[in-house]
Amino acid sequence: MSVPSRSPTNVSTEGRHALERGDPITANPYPEGSTEHRIWTRGYERVDREAEETLGEAAKDADGRISG
Image (cartoon, rainbow, N blue to C red; front, side, top):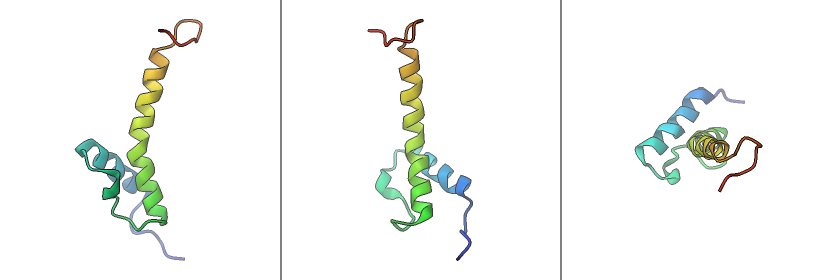
């Protein structure tokens, strides 16, 4: 079992920064199927997921129902 060369936090951060730069998800530099590839992708997608959750919460009224 080999030790990863980069920490999971650093790999995830790389994915987030790629999204912020506007790089496509296909810019993932890690081999497909590797742990690093999955972590990078999760970092890339996490920003969008957090934004969706924030927007979803903002759309709820005081009773917890979706406004609109």
